[in-house]
Image (cartoon, rainbow, N blue to C red; front, side, top):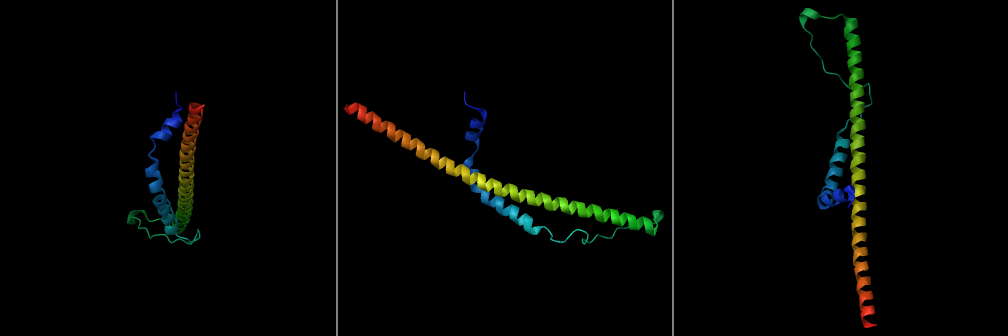
Amino acid sequence: MPLPWLAALKVIPWGDVIEHAPSVLKAARKLMDRQPQTPPGQAGTPATQTPVSAVPSLGELKNALIAAQGQIDRQAQAQRELAETLAELAEQNARLVSAVEVLRVRTRVLVWGGAAMLLWLAVLTWKA
């Protein structure tokens, strides 16, 4: 009975994974490059319009603006962290794919070497 993860490894189209790994890495790097490099607290906020019937006081507007700026800064930081995580995952995926390819080549060499050794032993025992 084969192990489930071995069966899963056989089902995965490794050729497609290896083929698409560089494009995933490039896309992750492009995403990182598109992220703004402005420090938190200097990002501009868009002007908002309030209805005339509910005009808040200047202090309330200032507090709302400070709260909105803090929220924007937190969201920008979270977005930068997610983009960095995505780039790291893409790089890890690329390294994993290259390691799997090395293992596939080593396995093929081992199988062919084992088959050649068995054939050699069969020839030796047949002659004796």
